[in-house]
Length: 248
Ligand code: NAP
Image 1 (cartoon, rainbow, N blue to C red):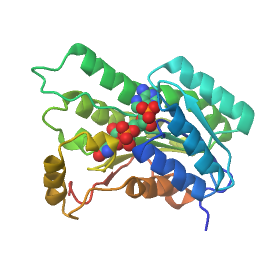
Image 2 (spheres, helix red, strand yellow):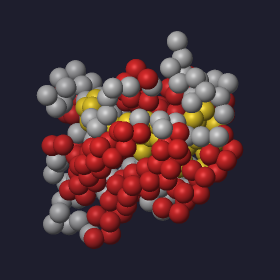
Image 3 (cartoon, rainbow, N blue to C red):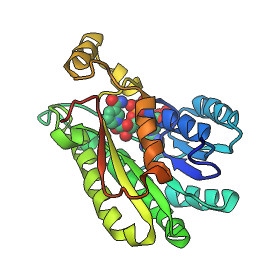
Image 4 (tube, rainbow, N blue to C red):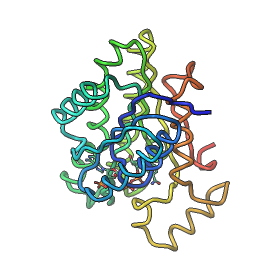
């Protein structure tokens, strides 16, 4: 059964890792997919080609998610060309790790802008069309680090905790219009973001997880599929941990 037949989704940061996994899963379920990225042009073209194999429309936009005017422009363009936006996944994110003692102001600002301000930008931009339609599902990708903290990631943890507060507040504001807003908190998901770590550190991570493995982009995509579809029509304002039991 296809769960998102003829819906339109916008996913930020989908050329790699988790965003890419979500785009493919949504397309497999009949969803037209618009997505953004910041630099990987070739990967964006490859993803478009993979998505259209599912018989859906697909389009990549090169746009830094931390820039509000670009969010408005892209949303307007999608609505003009494809008629609507039913699902927004705020996935774009970066890390600039370091102990607070060494963290620069630029490293803090960059992470807050790419991870948290981007969520404001795209949520605000899609709100208009979702309010008009009186339906919509917004999914914000947070992190277990936003819930429990992590040494060396004060900037990242702050951005991801901020996303949870933002999600809960938006859910309260738009619930009466049948718009749902939820967060997903991935644990340790093996992507380019985590492969920047030492293999020994990665193996330690795997062993510390109750399910004894890192997660895959598909593990996160499945949770997003559930939250995007009518299967979760009575769920809003929640943060679902998809972390192999890292948080209990
Ligand atoms: P990734 O492999 O590094 O991919 C990041 C994606 O976001 C890429 O498509 C990148 O585009 C895009 N991107 C980065 N900055 C952007 C910006 N300013 N504007 C637009 N697009 C931007 O990361 P990932 O591991 O899949 O992580 C995806 C999300 O899950 C992030 O929010 C991350 O914080 C969260 N998360 C990940 C893990 C994990 O273990 N991997 C755990 C918890 C939460 P380009 O290819 O053009 O650079």
